[in-house]
Length: 118
Image (cartoon, rainbow, N blue to C red; front, side):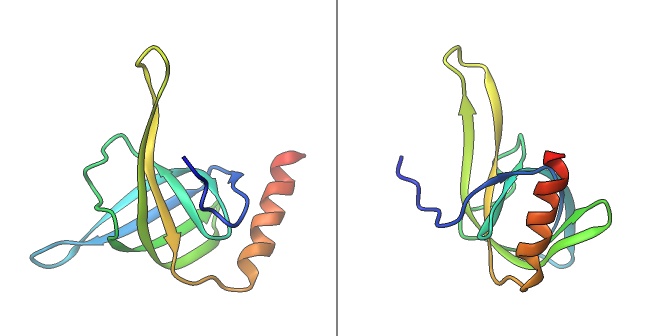
């Protein structure tokens, strides 16, 4: 599979809160842990790959210990289930692409990566 990503993925576990509108009215709020994060988006872990549709637009908040990395819209661009050679499921989830980034996002991401490396 060819990599289409233009920015480097950084393995980072942060909390991602997603608000998904319901078909009748209102919304459901769900919380996920990420596997990695890049300038373009985030991969969130989920056992249930039926909760989002490809192309679906969601409101998201990415938070790490009270520090907000991103708050805004994201589009579901990928779902994946990674399976080992022995058919044991390792992880699954969704790739979300950010709609727009603020200037301080890159700085916060670099700072967190440095803290995790120490």
